Every structure is written in structure tokens, then in C-alpha cells.
Length: 114
Length: 112
Image (cartoon, each protein chain N blue to C red):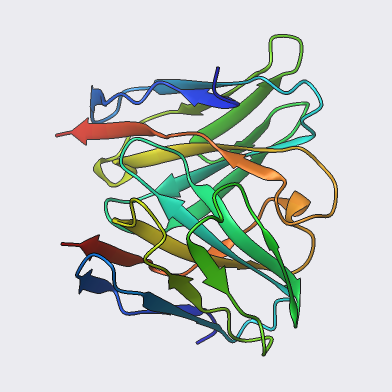
């Protein structure tokens, strides 16, 4: 089955620890994205990558880092510099330019910082 | 003012009812518009695009009003399975990856 796989689904971490969320896709999509969703708020873009070995900051990149060494993989690291890391993190991909509107999302990773 | 605004709801309706949601956007240069559906604690999924002339997909009808800068979603003959949060998404256009803006969502609860 083609799709996007995020892991872990649930993650608990102590304050001050870095954590890396995995995102893998087998859709052969060029572009990949990381969004953050907080209760009652729209999805906010953290980072995106339109091609291997290149990525761009989104609206709320501070405290996060990414890499895109392979087309299939776009891991997100939530660093200790992120002030409010508890959130629902969604990875997505698109065939090409995002202005077609269709993003394919993974099932999400719910991070709780204690 | 938020770039994309939606009434968070919840909208509580009985099965079989017709319900409509609006979404307003502030950027007049916005080029394309979409509705996504998100079930509780799940990922969003594209429900339908919104075309200038309006479009229908079964019980769902989407409309765009550029002059007033809003889009709407009408659901006829509501089913229990329609219970979800509906996200309005606006695209500014261009080929970069940061062109989409998501609204906060409108929660719909369909009751038996």
C-alpha cells in the first residue's frame, strides 16, 4: 500500500530533550512537509522540502530542524530550543507544486513534553 | 485578523439535516481553495476543491465568493459519518511549498 508512515504515533519526553519524528513515503512524491496542529488552530507549516538535499523554513521553524537525504524520508527533530513542543505533528507529501491543493498526510505523531 | 477564519462550532445537527459552513480569507490574491475533512485525532484528507463556478460532489456543494472573500461548504442529508472537523484551506498561488494556509476548522456533530 502506498502512503506516508509516521513514527512514533505517541511520544513522551522530558523538557530539554531533543526528539526526532520519522516520516517515510513510498508515493514517489517530490515534495514533503511538516505541520504542527494545536487545539482550535489551523495547521502551521514548520519546514518543507521540494527536492532531495534542499529544504525551506515554514512559518514556525524556530526550535526545529529537518533533513532530506533521501526522497522517501523527511525526519523532523524537535530541539530543546522549541518553547512549546507539545502538539500533534503531521507530515505530508505532494506530487509536485502545492498549489494543486492536494496534500497526503501521515497519521501524525502526538508529542507530549512533561 | 487571521488569514483564514472559520467558526469553530460545534454545529450539532440531526441526521438528515442540511448544514452549511462559511470560511473567510483575507488575502485577495488567493488563487485556489479547498475543503479538507479531519476525523477526531486523525490526519486531514482532501474533501473537495472549490471552483469559481461552484461544484458539487454527491451531497456536498462548495461555493466561492471572490467579491466577499469567502467560501462555503453545504452538506445535504447529513449522515452520522459526516461528523468531523472541516478545514478550509486557501492557496496563495506560486510553486513554493508554503502557499497553503489552513483555517482552524469547523466541528460538525451529526446526532441520530
